[in-house]
Length: 167
Image 1: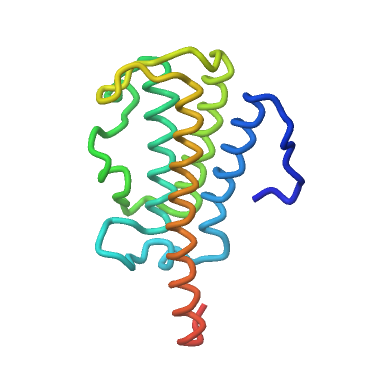
Image 2: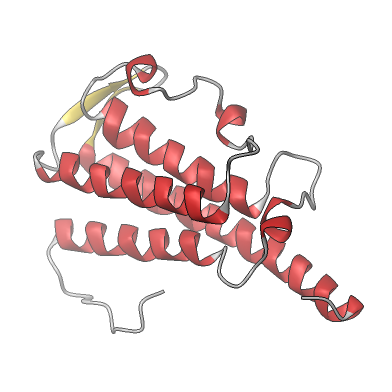
């Protein structure tokens, strides 16, 4: 989270943009100071790993801002239709590559959103038309939820490292 005091009286759009930026920083921070092995380690039965969370966050950015807001089909953007696929790691996925993918996705999301008003809508296959305002709020909650998952995984990893003397 930003060390700056938040602007709690900002206009709606600035508030949404700032809160989303804070949660994006939390997502990237999940990988700080960890090894490639640690960020790939599965500590829960699902596909969730720290690196997978960041990869999924890039996917979510693309789903909402790149596909839904612009109406561009996922296939045209190379976005999988299966959410589980967004958590799967390939051999070439590294802290550096996934972090860069996330940064690129968020920068593109910001450029796309800048060209739209909060009341502008895009089509979603399950929900129908959704506004940019709703997309911001949804992404804030999604990234906050996943940052919380990641905090727990980090605690498990770092606690295990402290217990074994590794890390």
